[in-house]
Image (cartoon, rainbow, N blue to C red; front, top):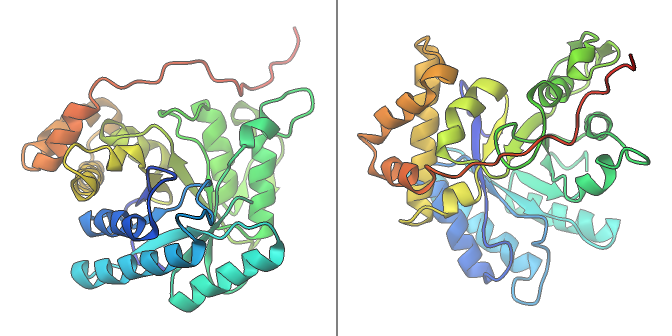
Length: 306
């Protein structure tokens, strides 16, 4: 639907989550898409508050999509949060989004209407991090694939959403691959054959910025969505320069990878080289140069008793 190949998709969660009018919200969407992102998205809190009713938000976001497409010549998208209090209201909002021509809707948990369905893992930690009565996120992810989702937040490995690399890539492969072998070292406890069931794109989002781009490109590959919220809108020059910085960083990493360079070893050098001819990226590098998330993962593989 977005006609992008050979690289991960690049997205952004609009910030602040709440407080913008529908018109200003649409302007933020336009600036990000015009700057080079493939799509933007609503956060889980954005619903239909008195200051930003859902219908107004849908209209201004649709206008932003069409305007940015006309100016860039690229296909753009926005994940409209269609979550509501009843199933009937959610369907009504999703149908309205379809009628506007918006390609993606988001649900805080529709397999019809020809729309991409973006699944936000809001409150997942309440469900999957309690070992006594919880449900592992791997199970939730597989249930999502079985029920028809298209995108799901899958953790970042390097950002603020914790998750060990092997475990995260284990359920990412369960989402993307048609067949996956048993591999207990990655938390895959039995062989899974998905036959012809459509795959799901993993979305990495949460605490990521331009310095993470080489690692994210290497870890998640082309069939993924790299989604920068504050990493776009926190740019000191504004929303559009933030989008430019992320797009330049991504293109530089993809080009370096295709040339055979090692992103794990040369990642910082690649970003610095690209920043020499992109003032937007240089400013972003300066802002986020000292931001790190250092903690132990809660979700660890169970080790057999000795």
